Length: 439
Image 1 (spheres, rainbow, N blue to C red):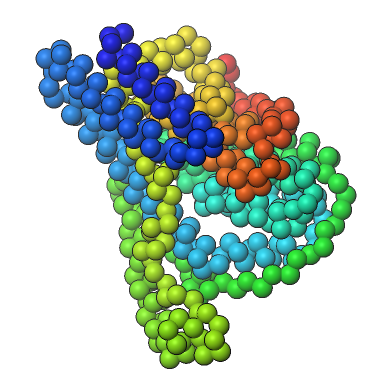
Image 2: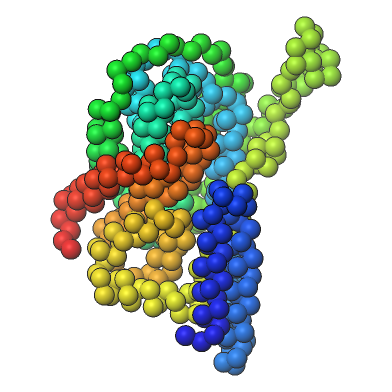
């Protein structure tokens, strides 16, 4: 309760208010939290120095930076693979295949939700949501009700799918890297996660019109090496798991090794392209049509979500600074000691609908409350799927509000929050039933 702590808390709240207003202010979310992180750690250092301690602040910030470095390198490798698969037309080919089948609106609704649920555990839920939403927009852009319900369905499915995989969401990745839950234990959340999606989907599908839109023909082909890159990505994930489980090394090391393999394969793709350079005049083919530029892995690396990666830096250091000043101990006492682990973990999910689930989960991990693995799975589930309650509660929801601007909005999502909340409650009840937990 010193002025150092109160000032740091005010700085964090103000910075996060700017993050929440990102869509209105058109200011990237990383900017305020990066500045706030620096100010908070100045206050931490001043507080410790005033008490005659000149070493603890340095040690504490180093610990936070190490945690961030592992997360950064892991995500950088994963994002580069996803960007490369996008460049090789993997996702565009999937979209073209779906829109050309002449399926009914209800079939598209179920199929996009199902694919979002099963793709997001491997690819990130943001990319998955954007690809599936592109299908919804392509088949019935003018049908506002279908677009709204389709986007809500995709957001819920993508967030639910990410909850049962260490790779599906940043929060699950942090829990796995911290060692709170083993890799194979995450799959115990599969049934609660699918219940979380199916309950609102089964309600919303009754409100869809019975119509079969005209199929859209779109010629898209996977570029050379696309399928090999998918196999390499799966092998990289397996390598990250083996590094963590068998060798007891950071999973980030396996991901970065896989990134190195991708860069070597990218070199081969570029060499193969140069062998056909005689069919190009500058960057045009002999028939005068533009040719594809040579594959460049560093271009895919540059296309990573750097704003998101820098946001993680700011959040981790902000929360770490507040922890150094004692606020996480206070919060842990209020939530986990007063409410109990089960109610506290359910509350975490509700908080993640308003505040991004990443700082919430990092705060829980930093508090490190005494919980068994079933409670850690519960907070992983609630933090992952709680963001679906509001359109601004997850990256997938925010992205689709931009993609379907004017149709899928905050308020159109809010109209169906009751159905999503039923899925949230049902998924928690399913987890309690499977594990035999009691409040």
